[in-house]
Every structure is written in structure tokens, then in C-alpha cells.
Image 1 (cartoon, helix red, strand yellow):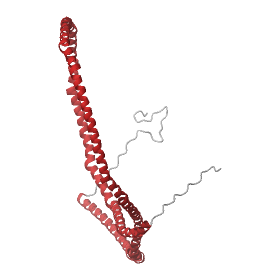
Image 2: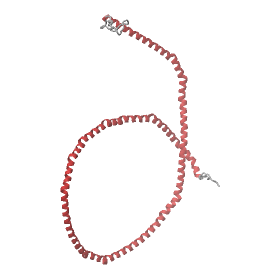
Image 3: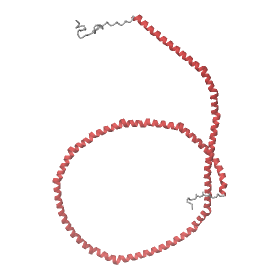
Image 4: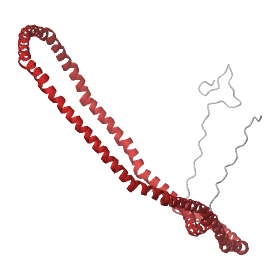
Length: 364
């Protein structure tokens, strides 16, 4: 006894007819010839679109986004922050001062006393008056009710014996027999019309079936169904051919693109690289070593000499200004030495002791 189920057998493909095999290869060749230019154009458009999106549209979109923020968002934020919000606060304060405070004052000092007064009037005046009016209306209603009951009884007796009893006799002995006869006639006429309609419908059914249904069924079975099967086979093969041709065209387009890229590299890039590496780089090194570096050293020495000359000229000009000032205004005055101030502190030889004073005022 096996514990595991045996693996399911792979589905067996249905055998294909000779018609499918006959039309498959020509259809695929024709479709490949038609699809290949479309696929190459599509790949070129995709590459161009990616380059355009990366190089133009994305920076343009970012610039437009920043411009939109600068022109719309930031002004609106500033307007909201510095105009609408302060204006709203000012309007709120103004509404509070002009509406809320007067309304509170009116409610507190006008409506509340008026309500208290009206409540007193309702409790002390209107309620007794209303109770008295209610008692009076209740008595009047009782009198009118008694009168109405008597009148209703009399009118009901008159209607019973003058209208209801004669109407019942007329219904029982006249209208009911006539209605039964009319109903029997209508039922018989309805049965006759039903039989007539059933016969006409049966005739029309068989006529339509013979004239329409059977030819349509034959047309469907012997013409439309085979044509539909043929068209389904053709459509399936065309769809498969389109998918296969699209994939093959993609590979061909990729190979062509790589070939063009390689050709462009060997025609333009490699010669430019060879010229740069073989010609321009040595020439540049020679020019750098033979021309640029000596020129730079000469320029540095010239600059150093010019700076020294400028420094000497500045020193000469400064000395000339000093000489002119001395000739015009004379020698500048020398600062006088400060006179020695008599110090009140004793010298090193005369030191203070407990028994003598060494200050100038108390010296013995």
C-alpha cells in the first residue's frame, strides 16, 4: 500500500490539425516582418523618452514645482499666517465685544427679569382664568353632547327605515341575479377568447419555427460554426504569432542597438580616446614642462619683484612724508620725564619699629 499519492501525469497536448500547421509558419513570418519595424521604433521611442525624462522633464518638473511653491504656496502661507489669522482674531474679539457682551447683558438684565414677571403673570393670572374657562367649556360640551346623541339616534332610525332597508331589498332581488348572469356571460366569452388565442398562437409558433428557427439552426450548424472555428484558429495563431514576433523583434532590436553602440564606439569614441591618450596627453605634458611651468616661475619671480618694489616705494613715500612734516612743523616735542614724587614710604635703611615713627609728619 502506497502512502504517497503518485504524481499527476502532465496534461497531454491536443493534437493539432494540418490547417494549424499549414498556416502557422507563414503567419509568423508575415507578422515578424510587420512587427519588427514597429518594435524598433518603439524601442527607440522608449530610449528617447527615458533620456528626455531624465534630462529635461524631471528637472523641468522640479523647477516648475519650486516655482509653483514660490508663487502660490509660500504667499498663501504668508497670507494665512500674517493676514488671515490676525484678522480672524481681531474679528473674533470685535464680535465678542459687539455681540456676545451685549447679548449677555441683555439676557441678564432684560430677559431674565421679563421672564420672571411673565412666569408670575402666568401663575397668578392666566392659570385661574384658564381653569375657569375650562370648567365653563366642559359644561357647554356636556349639554351639546346630550343634544347630539338625541339627534344622532333620530337620524339613524330614519336612515335605517328610509334608505338601508329598501336598498337591501333591491340588492337581494334585483342586482344580485343580474350580476350573476353578467358574470356567467363574461366567463364564457373569456373561455372562447382564450381558446381562440391558443389556436392562433399554436399556428404562429409552428409557422415561425418552420420559417425562421429551422433555417437559422441549419445556418448556425453548417455555416457559422465552421467559419467561427476557422476564425478562432486563425485568431489564436495570429495572437501567438504576434507575441512570438514581438519577442523576436525585441531581441533583434537589442542586437541592432548593441551593434550601433559598438559601431559608434569604434567610429567616434575609440579614435577620440586614442587621440587623447597618444597625442594630446604627451603634447600637454611637453607644453606643461616646457612652457607653463617656466612661465609660472617667471610670473612668480616678477610678482615677487613687483611686491618688493611696491614695498620700497611705500617706505620711500612714508619717509618723504616724515621729512616734509619735519621741515614744515619742526621736530616733534619729546615727552617730559615725570618728576620724582617724594615717596612717603621709608627707604630700605629706615624701617618701622614699634618705638619710632618713620613717616614724614610724625618723624621725631
